[in-house]
Length: 177
Image 1 (cartoon, rainbow, N blue to C red):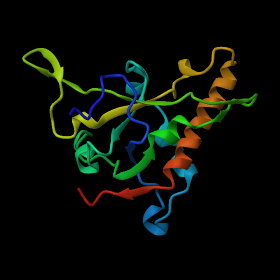
Image 2 (image 1 turned 135 degrees about the vertical axis):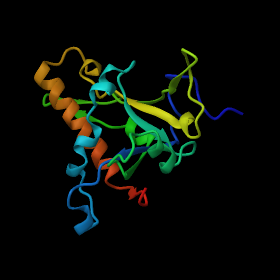
Image 3 (image 1 turned 90 degrees about the horizontal axis):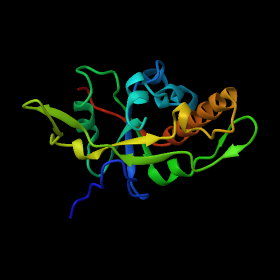
Image 4 (image 1 turned 45 degrees about the vertical axis):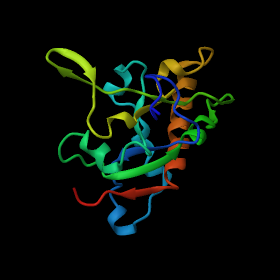
């Protein structure tokens, strides 16, 4: 049985996903993380924004270990904090635009990784690649159309804050790699 869904389809609701993040500056002193310290870890990069669909990369935990996910990053990446989030909780996030609350804005979908082989794009078959997925709904275009630009900005900020709050409850660090 194939554990991976079709590309760009929702991952199972009972799945957990890993997000690789940077350690907060004072983590080695306090060994504690506050949600506000993780807010930036849920901001879409330029590459994330240009992906189709725009998404924040995460890894389905039953298919990809943290060490395997780390192996897909640039060499010596500072992203050694592993944030664990539940797909169901991500989908249930309610966010405030400043004028009202919105729900069902976020989703977690399978996002296949591809690589070049003999000039052709093929599905990445490295160990752990099958777990690659993405959180959608964090980009400006995903916000409800009736909102003003300012309200969309507030909504995205609140979505990131809610994800950071979820992530601050369950995290651990990779051993020195």
